[in-house]
Length: 449
Image (cartoon, rainbow, N blue to C red; front, side, top):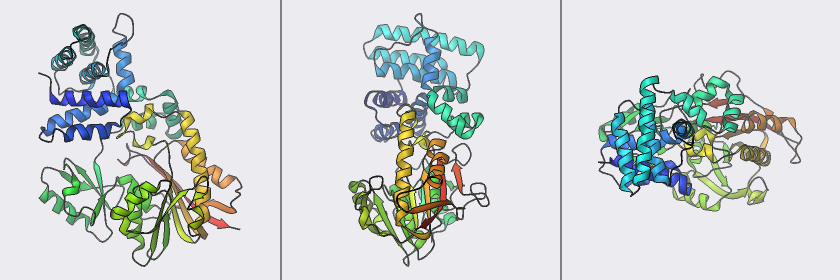
């Protein structure tokens, strides 16, 4: 028998490799079609998908060394998925018997009518099993680090240091918990108690980085729970910190310059209250339409479809007297590696350079919408220096044709001291430290004239 967990995981991996699907979305879709599945099997399928994607290169190298030609040559994505899942199990999962992992992989491949590949898989997986039994299990941290592209490993080491870079690449849990962002008026302890009562199968606990965060595991579709869209919204904890870092105050006028789906717009609207105003801008008008239809639609006073880099679209219509502007800029997304491990193989060093230049242009032009003496916060879901300190230095070190000057400024926000040190003008969030996605955040004072 081949377990449902391995069948589902193999389908997801094959889709990721064949169609460049995102693992999280593909896995959610597969698990949704098996709603009655034992949670333990769903958990195994999840671990196999994310585990294989994070250690793929290391697994392939190890298996290749055991083949006569020194190359792992498999005829289909499904066969590749079953072989790598078995290898991951042998190397890193002590709760699953080795013989069972090998037998299921071989059986799955043979069930596809490929007896020859099944025999090949049987041989190399048994060799791997014997090797691991003789020498011990390899390090998951080292395997995850070795599987990252060379350019990414190098950039992370330059940005974080060698040991921190390895910890970053191997950070768990995978996938991370779901984050809920509470409205300012809500009591977090009371909501945790209520959610535990109505959903005893789930786990609910306080976040550590955001004072608004509740972290959720095993609760299924949280949109069915009380308070959804009113008392709280779904929002990753690090993203909450980014919005809070703007330091928006009651009665202020604020712009969410790269609003996307509007989760930060919702939080900022809550911060400034009915006396203030929050506007939302984004490159894509379709995203703004969805924003207006959701919870953020009640928070946004106005929306603007703007290409900040080119100063086109509704750029001229956006007011120029905001107290604060948040620029959560387009980036490489390497801060999301725990939930999107495939992104490491879809980005290049050239992409990072291009995005870094785009971020610089977006911030310069968005800064023209801040009043003289106002504040701007720049953020990216990345921890790479190229998208962080190097962007900041360009912004404060070069002249601008916009007539706006940016100065580094300590970030004003009520955040844990471990995140925001005294007088800090920037900070990072790291999955292996704060448990959030990876972010870089920097604060600026805006001067005009």
